[in-house]
Image (cartoon, rainbow, N blue to C red):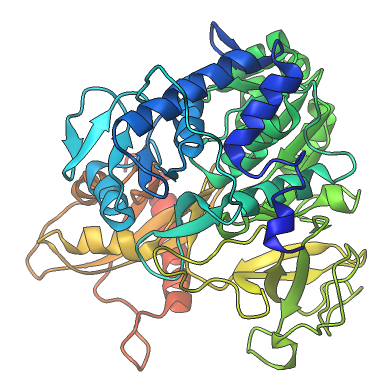
Amino acid sequence: MPLDQAATVVGGVRSLSALVRRAATTAGGSPALVAGARRVTWAELDDLVDRSAAGFAARGLTSGERVAVQLPNGVDWVVAVMGALRAGLVVVPVNTAYTDPEIAHLLADSGARLLVGPPGRGEVAGVPVLGAAPTADGPAPADPEDPAALALLAYTSGTTGRPRGAMLTHGALLANQQQCLALEPPPVRAGDRVLVVLPLFHAYGFTSGWGLVAATAACAVLVDTFEPVATLRLMAEEEVTAVPGAPPMYSAWLAAADAAGSDADLRRGFAAVRTASCGAAPMPAELFGAMRERAAVTVWEGYGLTEAGPVLASTLATGRPKPQCIGGPLPGVELRLRDTAGGPAAGPDPGDLVREDVFGDPFGAGEEDGEAGEICARGPNLFSGYWPDGADGPDADGWLTTGDIAYRDADGDLRLVDRRRDLVIVSGFNVYPGEVERVLDEHPGVAESAVIGLPDARTGEAVHAVVVLVPGSEVTEAELREHAGRSLARFKVPAAVHVVPELPHSLAGKVSRARLRELGLELAAAAAADDEVPGD
């Protein structure tokens, strides 16, 4: 589907902010947002977005300029982001856990002229900070009409140690909404009350949470801080019908039920839930089974990446919910498995097109534990490359290599097995080893460091650092973690720091990640064994 057509598939709108205008026209008196005691209808929200857009324009910001937003889930986030988009601006969502050095990189790299963030700051890295979106009376700018215009610069891993801004257009994001809504059943429908606890600064929360709510004129039940017991209570009170989530959320709900000694609150929270989905990280089989047995809900798993707006595949597409399975491609998305060595499967056959049952790989089809390949994707939802020049985007034929390895099981469904990159995913958030390594290496007591991800029952993966100290240095693990915490968000700070005499290097002088992981597992196991020794 060409990009210009993709922009018309969600009710004819051509920009994200126009979704709010359309919902205000068709469902003006219906609830749009529930955030604590605050309730906002679609008509009220449209007015707030108008005032926000006028406020951005009054500050002299013009179409195409960038505005960073670092706010928790809430009405203020929605108003700031949708107001900026209505003003023709490009939004740079900022993780609420980011420290000033991390924010400074995003601001400098994106060229953002304004940061809408927590109140009390004057500026960050020379960029002025407002505690909430600016407002002004008078006529608001019209919603953008060009679907090829940038909507978001969503910072993600790319191929380097520092986050890179994925350029997502209005058309690409609208296309992904349409692809999700074309599923049977769709994850969100008009009249749904959708729990939005996934961070809105994350592409998953933005599209699968707020985006689908806006596209269907449903209602978003916003949660700024996830606390499992309180969230279950809220779900029951608000009769939540749709839950987009991540594995740590479902694990926390089950743990809360265990602590209470009863599944009663768990069952009440999910009593009205029609669709529960899971993404950001693979869902363990035992977690899938426990949710079905104890909460009486089937969790549909999906797969995607920021650069795809973000959803690419789901078990909703095949109608076969299975643990540790991502199903098949969304309608309008093509997926292929490529020979990871770049062999004959590297390029798809032009004549082999888009259906859920066609992946186009010449190996592994229909075989249990078939040969794995790298997932390649094509569709109107893909990003336009990385800021500012579109580098490393889809190739000339529209294909994007994801770096994720999968195979097809006996039913033809996709199952993830590994990542080509060294990215560590903690509770669904990307951690880039190079970024953590640079911070550790700044400590005067560290001669060399390397970072890997190791399995963690609570967060999926945990960051582990393996360091070589400067001769004579007596730096402790606690000191290194405290040092890292001054520059890195908490989820990036190493869960453990292992001191070794030397790092494993290849003949070319690079750290061998494979050998490092083996070493890390041995060190982690030894540390765990030491912790179990009485008196230690």
